[in-house]
Length: 164
Image (cartoon, rainbow, N blue to C red; front, side):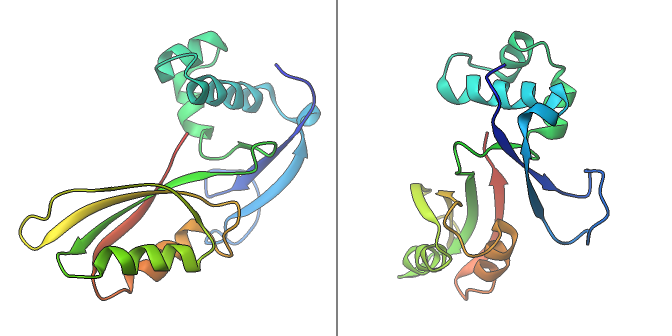
């Protein structure tokens, strides 16, 4: 493992702590006090992100971690040195002029940094859009962003997925 560092650990329903279950909270923790499983998850995520390994199986093997532990904690720990969590917003938009522009304006208004945009060809009056964003400058959680975007008139459906 690398030297000491700090890591953000979000508290979700699967974490052991007593907080409001609807609120996602983060703690800054010195890596020296973290259980080894968290450090291995971070290392596996780094291997995947760098392209050094091509699959989760290869990443977990190389850090001696079970795949189930990786899947359990991959969305619960982030390296604070990166400072940027990457999230993909998946939306189904009505095939109307300005729909994509409206979605992107909502994402931008939340303070997110847009990394990539992919849109399918509209079929049956709707198109699928995937917008990858960095959340480090957002003024709200990804869940709050999802809720806000879902209220847009031209959005049929929307959800966020966490990237490695």
